[in-house]
Length: 455
Image 1 (tube, rainbow, N blue to C red):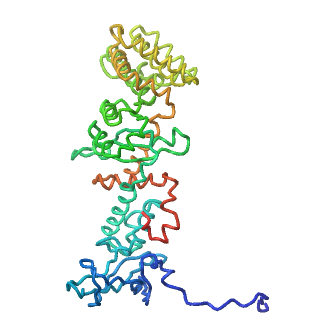
Image 2: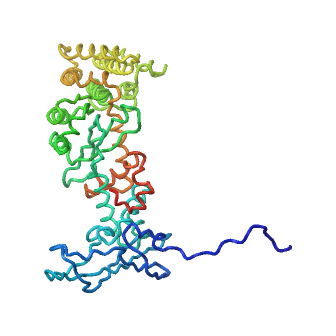
Image 3: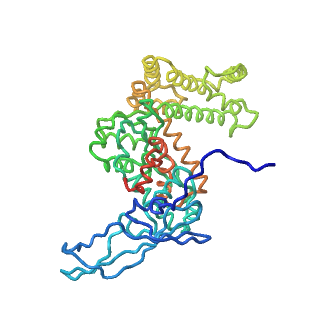
């Protein structure tokens, strides 16, 4: 085969790369003077671009006393760790005689072994790519503790202390879940969610914070720690049936409307239905249900909406209602179905009237033998305003809060559990950071050029 030829002009000569720009140290106020390439790492010898010789105490000029070398871990080149060896001048003041070292605040955080750009890279790896801390540490050539400290410090500054994190929040959802299953310490956290995007149909719900405990004090303390502008802007608080959350919202944000979402109302009615079935089961058989018992076999059918029942399920219920002792269960089941139908009605005004009639019917004078239904009636009457408020604010359901709780449970399972609430809080916020403006604040190239110092 003959040699291949080309009619394209010759390529221009290759020039030496500008290592200062290539290594992205210009944003740190450094320039590269030399380099060493090793099989397992690269070392860049740098110096400061601008030097300030004014004494920080008296402001007088100083003269160079000596130089010291500081080593920092920088952005990796490929998968190879990169070190910066920076010559830092020390000065002696001609006025007061003080000796000081030039500030490196543009290069790294105080007492940090990583440059600001490396801090930002590590945080992006954890938040955007879900890279474990051990993987970040391996690429940077540092210890796990050093990588974890960098991600924690920068993540706290960005995810927790950033002033714009709570901008535009008008609908707040609150719930709780168990973050660990040990006997040591409080195992519950209060989860606070921004439901404003759900109401406005502009995006998914967003995790705002996690607070230790699940009491009135936990939620109220968090609300009172926010600014007056934030509390004045909160118009709706969606919650479950915990009275402490209701009281905390009433005291901390008195102008906000409390909304008890349909999920928890139906779940509450379902619990009373199940308790009634278990009581009737014990009265009929003297013990717990078995596989062949009609009441036990119908336990899932009873929780199915009547509009969704199959012919087989309808026949099973008809056989069940033929039992005289099952009358309390039938009455409770009808109330349970009426609550579901009220929420499923396409007209919110009609649905509100239907649920109002249910509450009025069972709030008092429930016949004997319907203890569980009487308890349900007292609870619904106590939270009447919160329950009916959902029909006026249908986009304020706490369902997305439950969904985020599920995501947090999955995160905890992946990590095989957490022992430190600070780490759990930070990793949970990092997981949902991508949902805040689709992560553009982390992936913005301008942030890379500035080493993340814009935050």
